[in-house]
Image (cartoon, rainbow, N blue to C red; front, top):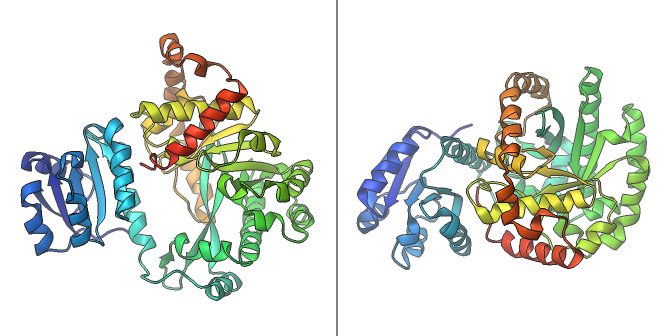
Length: 443
């Protein structure tokens, strides 16, 4: 499902010329009825019509209270912002929209690379699909019934090695589809599952389905791994490790083929309760990945004690790192933390070619994101790999060039950040990353 081509789109700029320019730019990638106007005339249009999408040009220069007026008059509209002073005002605009609970899709630089325009339209399409069923969050009983009926199944988002573009595996993501093909947003059912024991059978089903598919892919000669998220409750559940070991043997898979992802923020404060099971998984050979690194509150000491093999850097430190010096610093030094702890480092949120090149400069090991591929059903995976292999050589060649461009002058400008920092410096860096996470949720 994609958004219809006859949607009404209001473009508000500091000047009518800027609004017209943005309308033409967006019109190349998003069809619709565009109405450009300047800030002074925006009120008349906001009152006269209901818009599916609002696009704001240089909103940092709008009059105080204008955001509140927009949200009050068009609370259901999805918002895209373009900002000339992106590195300075981008995080502030994002935070302001968050406080107002606006449906903000993205804050983008102006001028904007075509790849980022395409990425935000993909995000708009996905948001339309996820909202195709307009309903309140699901109850625990509804989620439990959906698990029993097989409505919730894994879709697979690819992970590739950045150095050569080789597909190394897929992350399994829960997707709920109704009989008519409509998809429910994970935000409607995952919270209910996580707040109850339903998360245990749901996670076990996702793992079971994923290992079955993985066995099929490996039988075709594909050397792949699969990653599945697991909460602390799942890891603490009865007989989880023996159950998983039996399942791997049943599908004739090596434990190294599976990676269990744990979310940093959910592990914080609970690590002492799950370290034993995580240790047993590592002894078995299963990989352990810390997901969404940088957005939680766990300490470096706690992280160093976890039996982890992989660190996944949250997309808020990855997307836009090519145009934000602050985000680039956070990305590079997150990688240094991971490598300093002898972990494989994965960057999430690679949505443009510029993001890919920024990850290459930061020496990331593996990447995933919409630029590489979106989550897809199991039956599409083999065809996707064949298509990806036909176009990855150009990307990997550019990645090697990007790494060479990291000059000695640039490395010197980062001071102590060029070297593996001391423990106090690491603590300061992690605290700064946690504080920055709230301001760094841009595309």
